[in-house]
Image 1 (spheres, helix red, strand yellow):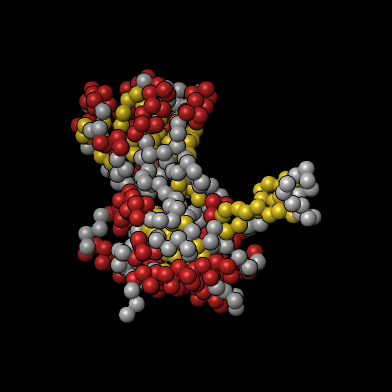
Image 2 (tube, helix red, strand yellow):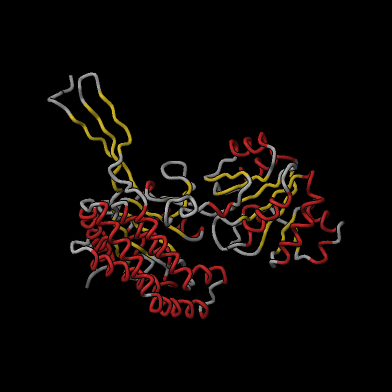
Length: 429
């Protein structure tokens, strides 16, 4: 009987072999496969939704929270978005073979730094089955074989999406490396540490999901892990903000899709405009059923204006400032200017995405310079921290690491490099 480690070793070995075959494909061949995969997703929308319905039904029965069910759901628009993402990736320049640096040494040796694939990338994720298409397409275009390990709650959805991509690739290209896209065939939790112990075959792991998943993967992995633990994102409304703009940005950052990592979790308001801005924005948030967790000063402002009688307001605790809710819950704190906002964000934030709303360029530049996060905005929503919104095509993940990739990860972030040396017989003396 095949053991789990033997099963994972076979999977990883097949991926390594496929990565070498992938490296030989031309840009045109990769793009033709991606376009065929996009069309296949659209053509198979009905069976994909049927498979997804099985996962949703099981999720409801098992008590998955609303935020997880939202991530799990595949409707016509999300399937179209997956297909569109594949077409965007096909339209992007090939990230491989780029000349990153060139040097000529005094002895005549010529050195060239060239972008190359990483090799075998393991993607571990939960709930969102669209990650199957996003990850596979970006890895494929960048010449990397990918091993996909989705959560058991999306098992049917992930399997049919991967199968659709593989079959479309085989139909489009006779020598399509089938094992370039593989799905871990077991829901056994021990498959993850087994797979991530195979440093001979696996080059990189990228977990996508909640903080507990990412920490568990990071702790057990023997291969490098690119990650972000959580998205505690902030919007700061400065004393010189256009308050109409600020309200639009706040509402978009919080309620457009609260279950994602780039949604705002804490609103910071300059004391100078708090009496005016807070009651108005609180009413707009209340209309969207957002629960507020306010500091003492914010609570007092709402009480004095009579607004808190109509709102769902609770006192904010120290733990709340560190919390990623992924839900219709928002922290509110009144701060004394941009310096206090920066201090709060750098202490409580997760290094993901932050925004300042202001007409004051000097304050904006200070915020942009001093906030230590992967993405920092001036007069824009935090919701833009996304590979698609950054023009990268489908996104494979967001990193808050400082070594290697940081922020949204697209094609270029899925490459490494090597040095090529061209000599005429030089030897080192």
